[in-house]
Length: 438
Image (cartoon, rainbow, N blue to C red; front, side, top):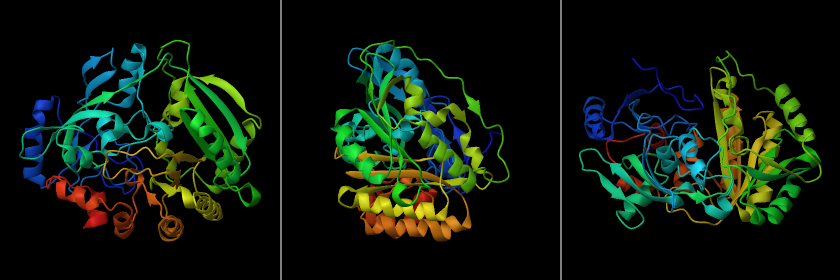
């Protein structure tokens, strides 16, 4: 019997039983059997969603990971057709050597293509290229009891829009055709500089974002007073010369889950302070391999175990431009007062490139993301305070990272939910969707 499946945050701790297929043509019968015996299901990729959006209400998921094949490639135009269970890492292992890269990638390369579409992921270049869904040319969608349909910007357009960011609820995406981005080298030219407070972050973002393909900041979530929001600003561009080598880094691993979280105020304060000090106070350029630039945490396999048996929750919000600076100060002050958080928060600006998806998370504004060890205080005190700030600022939370958002906040932030619900496959239901709607 296969081991149980969980979300990446291990909260809620609801084990899922996976039903997998070796071949795509087995999917209709497998879906039929799961629905017949359990009433509902949900497609599940590689388990990189943090909360309960990847957990089936029935706890019986279609495990898509074994559908990981490259179907077709045109290396002249950069059009790639793949099965939905292939990971972004597996895509890049093939495409980089041919001079192509993913136009949008999130902070982990271990997400599947199907999951990237279902969550409409974004990356460090949202200000230029928008979300993953903008670069999807078409996909195959299997709905219970129906023949496969092909969705694209021109065919089955309503289902195409509902499925991008649709959290796997409209049907099972089992293949997708992507438009890749040309590159000349696999390396990234970077510029790094530390900043002293949140006002300096916004000044740097105003100056540098439009000059570079990628832009992101790491923030000390425990800094207070005049240093609130201090951090490290990093921009990058694909190198114009160099090799197209894929140099796999040696991976470390957290071998077991400790009984309690290893993340506490003492370790956070020490690490965040050291991380800030070791980075340059003057702008410094360098060249980086693509993996450490895009996926720094992927080097540590099973890093989610460091949060202990109770797991953790990630809090990711986006605040519209008009209120971003004020609200971010309030959020970081509240987090510092709580003495909780992760080894550096991630702060980045989102642009105004519209997604084709109905429930896409980014909006023109600023996004903040960080992890918290699971605790009663987190649920009852910290998150309600942060939610109040986000709500008052007209912001919203990211469903792919969420395990606590109220139904009222979700419906207010994502008014297109009704259109998605109208197109949802009735046999597919997640714990997230039942939590925020039912």
